[in-house]
Amino acid sequence: MAKVTIELDCADMPPGCGFECGACIQEIKDTLDAMGGVSGFAQHLDGRIDVEYDPGTITVDRILETISTLPTTHEGSFLPRVIAE
Image 1 (cartoon, rainbow, N blue to C red):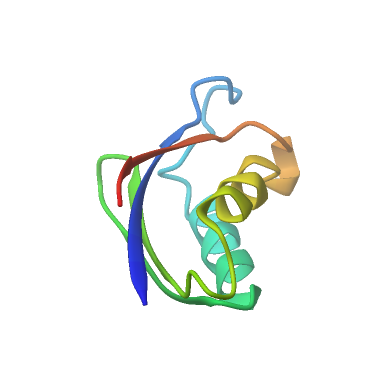
Image 2: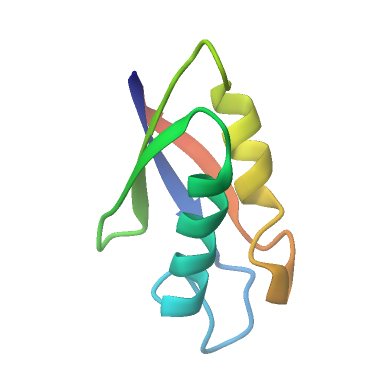
């Protein structure tokens, strides 16, 4: 297993929305949990997440692509970028 730390920029969300919203956090977690090859998720209070994944099954690019389509309430509002692998 490998781990990647991703920063989520949700600055383009409408006021009152953003990473701190429990619904968005849960949607990210549920979506990643459902992906083959992702085995862990941890949230930091500063807008970062850690994702544990199997590089033989899934790529970091695929994880980023998936996150960038979320949340479904404001699709495409997250601009994820890797800050540590």
